[in-house]
Length: 115
Image 1 (cartoon, one colour):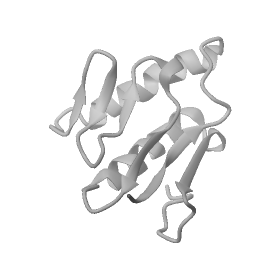
Image 2 (cartoon, one colour; image 1 turned 90 degrees about the horizontal axis):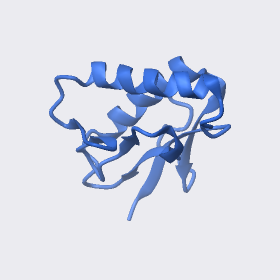
Image 3 (cartoon, helix red, strand yellow; image 1 turned 90 degrees about the vertical axis):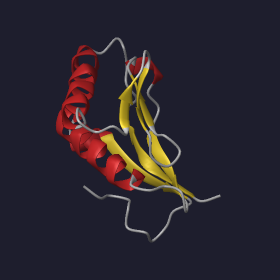
Image 4 (tube, one colour; image 1 turned 135 degrees about the horizontal axis):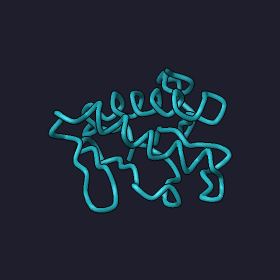
Protein backbone atom coordinates (compact mmCIF):
# COMPACT_ATOMS: atom_id res chain seq x y z
CA UNK A 1 0.00 0.00 0.00
CA UNK A 2 1.24 3.48 -0.78
CA UNK A 3 0.35 6.87 -2.16
CA UNK A 4 -0.85 7.01 -5.77
CA UNK A 5 0.71 9.91 -7.70
CA UNK A 6 0.55 10.95 -11.32
CA UNK A 7 -1.13 13.23 -13.82
CA UNK A 8 -4.11 13.28 -16.12
CA UNK A 9 -5.28 15.43 -19.00
CA UNK A 10 -8.41 17.53 -18.60
CA UNK A 11 -10.48 17.85 -20.58
CA UNK A 12 -9.95 14.19 -21.36
CA UNK A 13 -8.50 13.21 -24.72
CA UNK A 14 -11.12 13.10 -27.45
CA UNK A 15 -10.73 11.26 -30.73
CA UNK A 16 -13.06 13.83 -32.35
CA UNK A 17 -10.64 16.64 -31.49
CA UNK A 18 -8.22 17.41 -34.32
CA UNK A 19 -5.77 18.86 -31.80
CA UNK A 20 -5.82 15.70 -29.63
CA UNK A 21 -5.47 13.46 -32.69
CA UNK A 22 -2.41 15.51 -33.72
CA UNK A 23 -0.90 15.93 -30.25
CA UNK A 24 -1.16 12.36 -28.89
CA UNK A 25 1.19 10.85 -31.53
CA UNK A 26 3.54 13.80 -30.98
CA UNK A 27 3.65 13.02 -27.25
CA UNK A 28 4.32 9.35 -27.96
CA UNK A 29 7.06 10.19 -30.48
CA UNK A 30 8.79 12.53 -28.02
CA UNK A 31 8.64 9.84 -25.31
CA UNK A 32 10.03 7.27 -27.77
CA UNK A 33 12.88 9.61 -28.72
CA UNK A 34 13.69 10.50 -25.10
CA UNK A 35 13.79 6.87 -23.97
CA UNK A 36 15.06 5.22 -27.16
CA UNK A 37 18.16 3.87 -25.38
CA UNK A 38 16.43 3.16 -22.06
CA UNK A 39 15.95 -0.58 -21.56
CA UNK A 40 13.30 0.12 -18.91
CA UNK A 41 11.04 1.76 -21.49
CA UNK A 42 9.54 -0.87 -23.79
CA UNK A 43 6.98 -0.42 -26.54
CA UNK A 44 4.56 -3.25 -27.11
CA UNK A 45 1.65 -3.69 -29.52
CA UNK A 46 -0.68 -1.45 -27.55
CA UNK A 47 1.35 0.61 -25.09
CA UNK A 48 4.68 2.02 -23.99
CA UNK A 49 5.55 0.46 -20.63
CA UNK A 50 8.06 1.77 -18.09
CA UNK A 51 9.50 -1.18 -16.17
CA UNK A 52 9.83 0.65 -12.87
CA UNK A 53 7.61 0.41 -9.81
CA UNK A 54 4.21 -0.88 -10.87
CA UNK A 55 4.96 -0.39 -14.58
CA UNK A 56 3.22 2.85 -15.55
CA UNK A 57 2.24 2.85 -19.22
CA UNK A 58 1.04 5.06 -22.05
CA UNK A 59 -1.48 3.50 -24.41
CA UNK A 60 -0.83 3.97 -28.12
CA UNK A 61 -4.56 4.56 -28.64
CA UNK A 62 -5.49 7.98 -27.26
CA UNK A 63 -8.98 6.70 -26.37
CA UNK A 64 -7.42 4.45 -23.72
CA UNK A 65 -5.45 7.14 -21.86
CA UNK A 66 -6.89 8.01 -18.44
CA UNK A 67 -3.84 8.80 -16.31
CA UNK A 68 -0.11 8.20 -15.98
CA UNK A 69 0.73 7.24 -12.42
CA UNK A 70 2.61 5.10 -9.93
CA UNK A 71 2.21 4.09 -6.30
CA UNK A 72 4.87 5.42 -3.96
CA UNK A 73 6.15 2.43 -2.01
CA UNK A 74 9.41 0.68 -1.32
CA UNK A 75 9.48 -0.78 -4.83
CA UNK A 76 8.86 2.33 -6.93
CA UNK A 77 12.52 2.79 -7.93
CA UNK A 78 12.85 5.68 -10.34
CA UNK A 79 9.15 5.77 -11.23
CA UNK A 80 8.75 9.36 -10.02
CA UNK A 81 11.50 10.48 -12.40
CA UNK A 82 9.68 8.94 -15.38
CA UNK A 83 6.29 10.32 -14.31
CA UNK A 84 7.69 13.84 -13.90
CA UNK A 85 9.55 13.75 -17.21
CA UNK A 86 6.56 12.42 -19.18
CA UNK A 87 4.43 15.07 -17.46
CA UNK A 88 6.89 17.76 -18.64
CA UNK A 89 6.65 16.45 -22.22
CA UNK A 90 2.84 16.35 -21.98
CA UNK A 91 2.78 19.98 -20.76
CA UNK A 92 4.95 20.97 -23.71
CA UNK A 93 2.75 19.14 -26.23
CA UNK A 94 -0.74 19.81 -24.80
CA UNK A 95 -0.12 22.99 -22.81
CA UNK A 96 0.19 23.24 -19.06
CA UNK A 97 -3.47 24.11 -18.52
CA UNK A 98 -4.57 20.59 -19.56
CA UNK A 99 -2.10 18.67 -17.40
CA UNK A 100 -3.23 18.06 -13.84
CA UNK A 101 -0.82 16.40 -11.38
CA UNK A 102 -2.46 14.72 -8.40
CA UNK A 103 -1.76 12.66 -5.33
CA UNK A 104 -4.17 10.27 -3.65
CA UNK A 105 -4.37 10.79 -0.78
CA UNK A 106 -3.08 14.37 -0.94
CA UNK A 107 0.39 14.51 0.54
CA UNK A 108 3.31 16.71 1.42
CA UNK A 109 5.80 14.71 -0.66
CA UNK A 110 6.27 17.52 -3.15
CA UNK A 111 4.77 15.95 -6.27
CA UNK A 112 1.66 17.99 -7.03
CA UNK A 113 2.52 20.80 -9.36
CA UNK A 114 6.09 19.63 -10.01
CA UNK A 115 7.50 20.35 -13.42
